[in-house]
Amino acid sequence: MQVCYVGRLEKVKGCEYLISALKRLKNVDYICDIYGDGSLLEKLKELAAGDDKIHFMGFSSEVRKVLPQYDVLVLPSLYEAFPLTIPEAMNAKVLLVCSNVGGIPYIIENQVNGYLFDMGNVEQLGTILERIAKNPKEQIQIIEQAYDDFKHSYTEEVMIKKTFGVLEEN
Image (cartoon, rainbow, N blue to C red; front, side, top):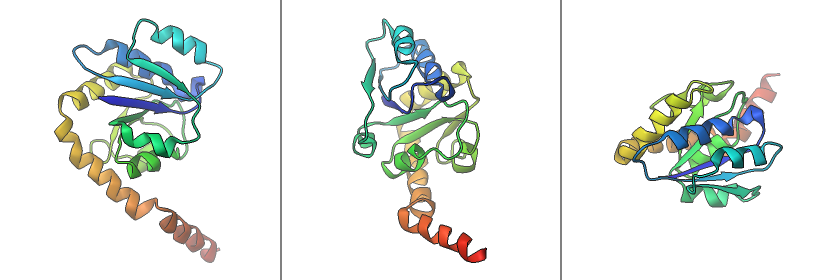
């Protein structure tokens, strides 16, 4: 299972929960690439020490190009409004596993177009990742639903129409 995280390496983004969940996995073959930079980089590297399956990739402005190589994108944030990585992952057909905070539950419906877990709940996140790794075919319908949601709600064309619709109402 190819897992990635994309975002700032700051407390509010919750990357330490992803690392902790991965380190608890037993009998799960995974690689996790962490894209981003921030004040917690060294602390997160210390937390990941000893796990050669977790790689720090640094900042990338080419997220859209790298996303398709992954099976799962994890967003373990403590707060989010509308993270742009969600529609980018949907478009790339990458399974989403996100914390149930802020605007995320308005975009992701648990086990319909992605997975939601309680903020900071390392055990719950680990259980979801284990389920995904052990049942990859089960995820196809969820990924396809997320892609359909992207096409109907989050393409550039759709977003422009929605924006002009709001402007015309006012």
